[in-house]
Length: 368
Image (cartoon, rainbow, N blue to C red; front, side, top):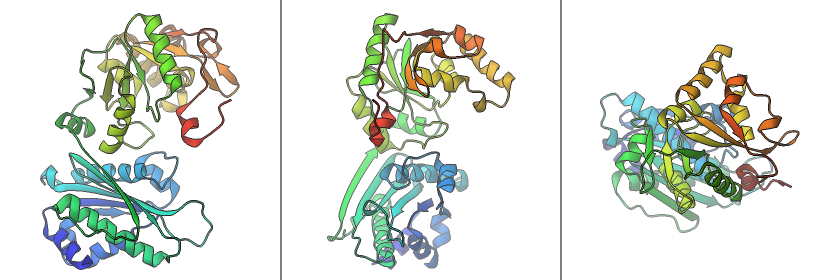
């Protein structure tokens, strides 16, 4: 069965890049040892250590979850596009696998694996919980079999026989043509709402998850500015994994009814300012501090040039206080460069204070 699946894949027109971590080396070995591997595998890598994984997809809170697999799949597809040359995009894929298999050290949580197949217009994820009674070799074999079955189903259109002795969950999302263009850098912005007029004000964020603090900022900003405030979600950020289509679908579903939503591939604020000329950014004090932080610029001249881009695009910043090191801080507590400070307007603590954060909600940290 395994041999048949591999031969069918190698005989197809599909070419891809494989990134696996924490497990899955058995899959690569099986693919390489069957004749025709060069027709399928453009590249394969095992970013096993934390730094290796971060250098590939950016910072992650956990190296073993379905979103890491999705990010590896997206990265794999992008790399496949670079390597394939004249190959048709519809015949390219990226495969990502993130696993925690049996080990010699004690580990909390289940033995598990998450994998993703990414094509130009679709994301397919599979997650499985493995029995801790099994040896690593048996788990590797099981994960490899599931990976081949997923590839067979998503790329070749063949329904495989799934094992009955493990719990499998699957998620799939197909992207619209415009979202595909956004995901792969062929456009910069995309309105996810019925109204597509450029926003006058935007609250930018990952919204992972959207919480009461976001809602309170939206409500206060709308009242203060006298206009609607849209939400902007960049699918690519400087130090985070690119969002696959399943993740985009999840985030948009959570933002339904919160206001107009714009998807972008604009990780930097000066890029957002030039795309939405005349916009007011609704930000927390921690965000304006990061924008001002000299560590993110090559030199002083580059930082000042970035601030001038904000001014040239008539961008403004409405800055809300945030709980930071040293306590709750508002704009008045911050030491900002003069030009950036001139573009900013602060919201006082007496007018607004919310201490909740998305990171704390994801990790269960105490925000009190």
